[in-house]
Image (cartoon, rainbow, N blue to C red; front, side, top):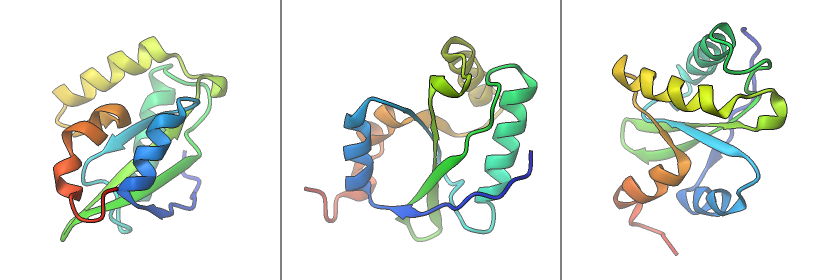
Amino acid sequence: MNSSITVPSVSFNELLELNKSNHVGYLVVRGGGHPDNSQAWIDGINDDLMERGVTTSPITEAMTVHVCEGRDDLVLVYTTAEGLNMGKMAMWRLQSLEAGWNLTWLEDYVVNDKDYFTEGLE
């Protein structure tokens, strides 16, 4: 699955608002948002999710958030309407942690990583 998607940059405050929306899900790849490698992360995750039967269609929306010098995080957007099996997704995420990928759900990210974003928080 190698289709390039536009990956806009958002602020942490925008992620806080997205987290309140509740109509879609968000998966955060810590450190995966650098412009040189975000598309590779998207392609690799899409390939893995589809190969394992977690989803029937690729994730087509993503964004990045600048954390600090040398670190940009990638936020992947998904919905169950796109053929995603949430039970399989939860298991896949746990297995990805065992494989060394630094992934988290947005609802956990905005709580656990908020101290990186103290400047400009409302």
